[in-house]
Each structure stands twice: as structure tokens, then as C-alpha cells.
Amino acid sequence: MSGSVMTDQLRADGSLRHLLTLEGLPRTQIERLLERSQGFVRPLGATPAMSRSLAGATVANLFTEPSTRTRVSFELAAKRLGAQVVNLEVQLSSRVKGESMLDTVYTLQSLHVDAFVIRDAEAGVLGLVAANVAPHVSVLSAGEAHVSHPTQGLLDALTVYQRKQRFEGLAVAMVGDIRHSRVARSAWHALHTLGVGDLRIVAPPALMPERDEFAGCTRHTQLATGLKDADVVMMLRIQKERMGQGDLPQGAAYFAAWGLTRERLALARPDAIVMHPQPMNRGIEIASEVADGPQSVIRDQVRNGVAVRMAVLAEVLTSRAGGA
Ligand code: ASP
Image (cartoon, rainbow, N blue to C red; front, side):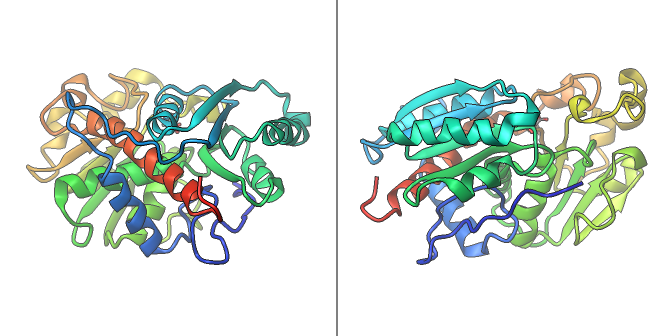
């Protein structure tokens, strides 16, 4: 599987300009983003964190794939920092996608858009846009094909840290459709960089990634060995939209072999946390009693998503020459 076009994400002074992937991002930069994110987290029921720090900036959300949480949380994040937001759902045929996307971006750039938040099903389109925008403009990934979902990786790392207060010494099991998952790739990049030593990918052979990916992770094709004494169990959705018909496991059969039930979760540590990026296929990769159970931090992940997107927007827009 091909990766995205690599574009330099940092400015000459080391500040973050684009966020397309967590791969290769320095640990100090990831830690800085997590610290900044934590500063935006508020308990449920309290007034959300808000400021006018991005007043005068404009953020455009360009989504060519469906999204609920990511799009809404990027929009709330921008608005809670005082930026203006435009949302576009773009339908482009893949043949003309790169060019049409650039035309759309140039138009919006002329309308003073400062940051583009883009989700696209094709690897490479985000890199193309990032390589062609004006120097004061930033591009942020909201999910690129199977390749990366960096703000998800950050919110996952933040959620782990809030519950465990460390990364070193943790055993993290990522379970399910790793092969097609951008969430697993970004979690791997974040957690590996942050020092998680025991990082496991746990999947049936058909859903395992190629051998040259996920360096530093151990591979488990048995759920029981993968879950054993894990501190964190990260369940992943079966990505039907990225599979051929042939390799699609049947729902009930998949659940019987790979679904996370209460009994199976008991193989992990008693204080293990359960994560899922959503949308969940309840009764396929996870039982409802686990998704809604006491070890689940799935709703924390959603709450942390807004905080992380605020931190990333603040980081790229206020570190420009002249600020927001
Ligand atoms: N919402 C996540 C993503 O966009 C996870 C998923 O769709 O399974 O990748």
C-alpha cells in the first residue's frame, strides 16, 4: 500500500505548519501538542474552553468522505477559538480529484482561508495540497485513506495518558482490522514515539498489514495472546469500504472469533481501558456491554478530540509570522 506524499510539516524555525501524519514528528512536538490539548479539556457539564485567540482566522473543512465526530469537532474547535469556519462536502471523481481539489483550495485561499482541514479516501491528495498552498496557509489531515489520521492518534495518546499517567511500561493491544486502519497507523506512530514498549497488533491474517509496516510492534493472530495482560485495548472498526468483497469476514462469525466480550476482556489487566475510534459495529468487533461498560473510555476519546483539534489549530495558526 502506498503512503502519502511527504511534505515538510515543520517551518524553518521548527514550528508546526501542516499536520498530515505523526510519522517522523519529533517527540517534543507531540508532547507539546498533548500538553496544549490537556489545557483545553474541561469536565462534562462545565463551560467548554473558549478564547478569541484565532479571531480573524478562517478555517475550511473539506471532506470527501463521510465524517461525524471529526468534522463536528474540528468545527467546534475552530469556533471555540474565535475563528470563522466554512464547511464543504466535496464530491469529485477520482480522475480529476487532484486538480479539482487544488482549484477549490486556490479559490478558498483567495477568500482568505488560512487553514484547510481535509479528509480524503485517496492517499496523496493531502500532500499535493500541502505542497501547493501559499506559505501562510496550513493543511491539516482529518483522515487520509488507510494512511493516517493524526488528530485521532493524538487524542488516543491523550486518552491513554489521562488514565495511565505514563507511556513507558504500558502494553497496548490494537485489535481488529489493522490492515485498512489509518487510526491504527497514527496510534502506532504516536505511541511508539512516546515510548510505549509493548505495542501489539492483533488481527486475523487477512486483516494484518504488510510485513514492512508497524515496525516495533509484535504481531498476534490469536486474540487471547494479544489481549494477555494488556493495559490498553484499542478496538478497530472493520473497514468494509476499503476491502474487496472476498476478504470480508461475516459479522456473526467475526464476532464469535474476534469480538471483544466481557470474558475476553478479562484476559487483559483488571484496570485495562477499552478504546474505539467510532463508528462502532456493536456485535461485530465489540459487545455493547464492553463499549458501554466501566472500562470503556470511548466517550473520553470524543471529548478529547475537540481539545486536540483546538491545540493543533492554535499551534499552526498562532506560530505563523504575524500570528492568527
Ligand atoms: N472514524 C475513524 C476514521 O475516520 C475510524 C473509522 O472510521 O473506523 O478512520
